Image (cartoon, rainbow, N blue to C red; front, side, top):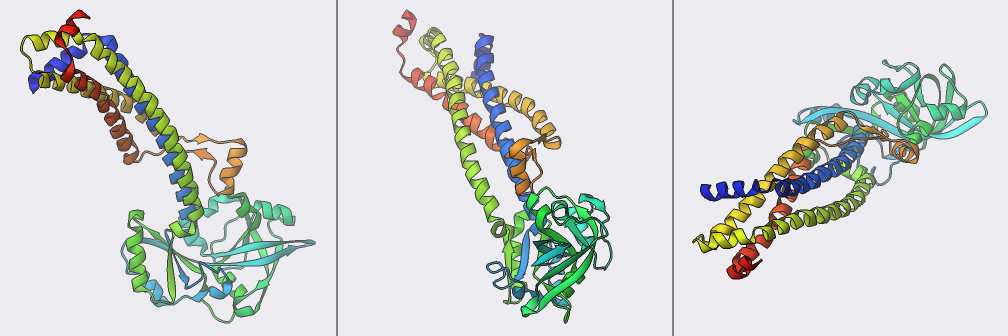
Length: 407
């Protein structure tokens, strides 16, 4: 076997130009495939990360809240719930939240808004919300100040220090109303959130919708240390809590994003298939040329007593060596580019940037450096290259020695 590998290696470098041409086809196929898939998976990871950072890997609701997100589906937090969740390994953070809709007013301007009651300290640790403040300051203690999106503040013609009037429906049909000072104005990537979101201290939000009892929540957002254990942790939390609660994964809450990713991935696979077909023909054409040029050599080797099956192995080794050389060079060329673009993503402008902002995604084009991206494309290109060796295998098992000498 070692002798056959030596023969294959020497055969390759008898015609350097042909070998370099074949390896270049492998390099080009792998380089383009890695760039394309890394860009796609990087975008998917960015979309998922942006969504999960807002809603959590899992959310605990009162049963039925996911289907009917009404303030009447809120629940009262119990200390036993906190102890139960704290006893589950793999949970890094639990954020309490209270969301409700209300009518906001300032002067002659009114607009419907989404009130999000948050724990300012925990929320800032998770999303660095304080870094999104463009005017005023981020609240840190228990007070009744609120934060407005910049587009909402512009519509209501408000500035820091003005007072916002809120009027809506509270828990169990009571009237919810209050007057709140604006302590800061934020800007998020999402145009929709900037236009309708009001952040309020959780205690103030609870008093707004139901001042008679503390602890009212619409959700507990659970963040996991290892997202790969999503389903097992979901079942563990469901088993630990009462049947009065439902545990929803981000895959359900962000189903629209997953559907978008699925459709885009199919289109990407079609484009990649076209690339693979072109690359496969390029590799096959050079293998075909190499086989035709070596017909006389094959005939001589068989004539002096070399078995055809050994000659077949020589041809397989030649193709394999060329493929490995091309793959190594392709990885060496693509990896630095992908790693650079991962840490320095390409900015997006124009209408495409607006579409990204609507999904609360930063308008950049990131690249993924996950191992599966490199491994999957390397295996596919290697298989395509090795499939090209089928032609010389078939030729060597059937070719006529006399005809080979005549050409």
